[in-house]
Length: 194
Image 1: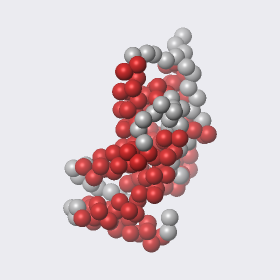
Image 2: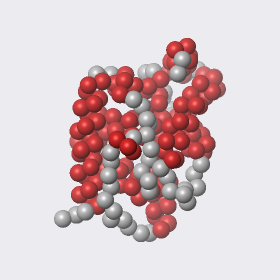
Image 3: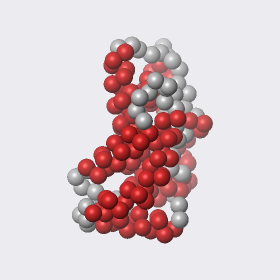
Image 4: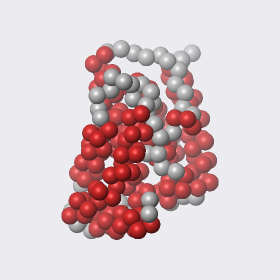
């Protein structure tokens, strides 16, 4: 992303923070390509019978962001971090709905590794299980859960996560390693009870 467009986005986010709702109209064209990239990453891993389309996911997430009562966007990285959380919730809600319709269970082993970063789990059941585990991790350590959310769901890089969370890139890397291992243990123990 060009430096001028990053500054434009940061400026529009500051305008939104001050209550300028007209900035929403100007912001969408600037963030749309990045939101599309994030949404494609999520959708790439969805099963073939998945009926939610990439464009629907983008628009649902953007509407969710636009409807937020109070907007306090620190910067572009913070905005995309919150957007990734919105997309995650939309997909998890969709997956839970589909799972309820099937009324079935699952007992497969789930593997979370670096190859999955930036894409949703391959099955809606995996996505629901990951979301449940991520909520448990947030109780243990909220910041580590946010790192996973921004990296795995949002596709943000280490520097962007560090900027959004106001921590060092090395801390992001340590948090990611801890969280990934914690989630692997949680997902595998949930799916393979002793």
